[in-house]
Image (cartoon, rainbow, N blue to C red; front, side, top):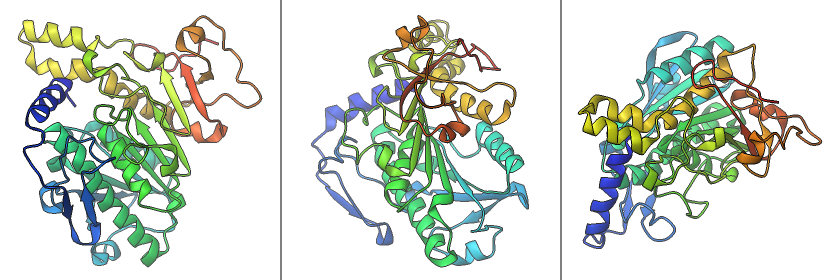
Length: 355
């Protein structure tokens, strides 16, 4: 996800806002989508059609760990003919802006989850809808969320799958998709937001962005919560039951400041490095979550504190009456809520405990 593209898209959108007057689109069983308040956050853009977005649900299980089976949200035959098992947990993985379902981190997560337990892993690839003008991609998150929610409700009603056994993990705009999935499914078990996208979602109504009501448990990892004018891609707003702010939730150790990295790459003509430098901190939330699954010798323990500055000054070495939560997969075990801070190393292994 590149901030330069987002900034350019927003400027273009603002210059043309009001030229287009379509206010509603309807897509059969997915329902109707309007751009009236509060869903005017995408600068009047509406979701594209299901055919244009072309979101695919790709199933991996222990029976097919490396080759996916395509599931269609409106076709029970594809489900019946697959290895999908409604009696075991399901993880749904959702990528973000300018990304796709074939990223290395998707492969790592799928492999690691299947090593941990017998699960259904569904990788949602909505790359056709994500490789668009940023406000249009923002609007498309609503459609992708509706598609996946329709699928979950289908397996709930036709195959007795328990929504409480579903865990949606989304990065960036994928975290916003996860929120829309949860809002369309009653009693969704868990959503993990990996640096949820902030541009066009900050300071909006809870209906518009991922929030704690979208599942029984919502945990967020904030790794790039700088303001957009500093080329931040995430948000510093606390949207989950529990929100983790590694290294304060802004620029991460080992990553260049996005604006500085972008300027150096442009002046040195290192355009191939531009995206990775700008999105380094944004991507770090994924790496922290993967490490929480794979590192059995060190857990990234977090502490409640009034601020990150107080945390690093050693003023918050107690977790009060309950256990200290750990960032990542096991965060649900602490039954804690609120904002929690921690520090990490600048490279893998990232786990570091200063208290």
